[in-house]
Structure formats: C-alpha cells, structure tokens
Length: 218
Image 1 (cartoon, rainbow, N blue to C red):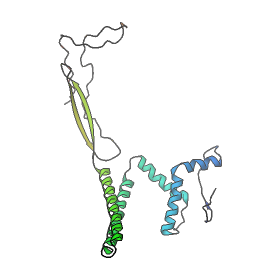
Image 2 (image 1 turned 90 degrees about the vertical axis):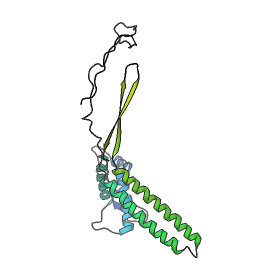
Image 3 (image 1 turned 90 degrees about the horizontal axis):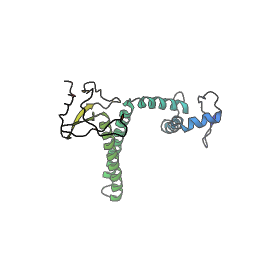
Image 4 (image 1 turned 180 degrees about the horizontal axis):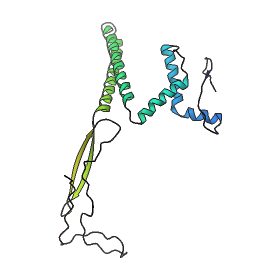
C-alpha cells in the first residue's frame, strides 16, 4: 500500500487487515479512524522541525504511539494532559515575552508596529493563563453533591445535601459510609382502585402515622 504525497517520493504504509477484509475496506477503516491520519500529520510536522530522525519512523509508528497514549487517556490517565498543558503554558509565556520585547523596541519610532506586537503578546498571555487554569482545574478536587429528601409529618419535605470531595482522578468517591434505609417506612389507607388487587394511592387521615425509619447508621 503506497501513500504518494505530491512532489515527494512514495512511502509505504503498513496496516493490519482483519479476517476476510479486502484492501479497500482496510484502508477505509484505518483512514476513518483518527490514529493513522494524525500519525501522517505528526510525521510531516516533525520532518519540518527536525529533519530525518534516527531509525526513520514511518506513519504507522507515530500512529501506534498516538493510539497508546489515547488508550491511557480513555482509562482516565491524566498524565499526558497535564504534561501538554504545562508545556503549552511555558511556550506561550516565552512567546509573550518575545512579542513584548519586540513591541518595546518599536514603541518609539514605529507605534503601529508596536501596537500589533503588543496585541499578539496579550493574546499569548491570555492563552497561557487559560492553559494554567485548565491545568489547575485538572488537578483540583471535585465536589459531588448527594441529595436526600425526607418527608416529615404534614407533608413538609426536608432536603439534606451531602458533599463529597475527591481528587481529580478517573474514579468517583466511594459511598460505603452512607446510611441506607431498608424496609417500609410507613403505611396508610389507600384510595379505591378500579382493580381491587391493584396498588392504591396513600391519602391523608387522622390516624396516627407510623414513625419513619431512622436512616442514619451511626
């Protein structure tokens, strides 16, 4: 299978075909998926940045590494996201200082050019701040609210909120210490039902209500 970019020599792309899958279907499947396409992009960018790499990795080599990192992210591993955000923030901060330097150099004689550099510098500064905020949000503890509704005598509902804090990991906090109420909390007379064996609707009465079960374990 050959990939022939315009104006460059052909490169072979090795892909794994499924059983009873024709070549056209194999290429359609891998090109619809994200990994090989992003591997081609990564290969082109790195060749422009660094030239030929030792071992001359191919499209599928970049695609396999991208897929391995994506698999970790899908399992909740946030190390890659943290590293990318930190690296982006540092690069944007360096870009801000360079643009601010150029704005300062043009400030006296070329005010319009200085303004353009300053605007670009402020954009880099804003994006740097956004990357740092995203990084902080990624690592800050998340708050989860568990809402319990209790109905007191007279039909008044009391809502109690419980807040659970846990780190910015992929798993939710455990609820083993929560209280659990079991059994029937109370019974009362029911409205008539067309089906004598059906479930009636509770109505208010002057009879003494059965006490609600204590839902607190401790």
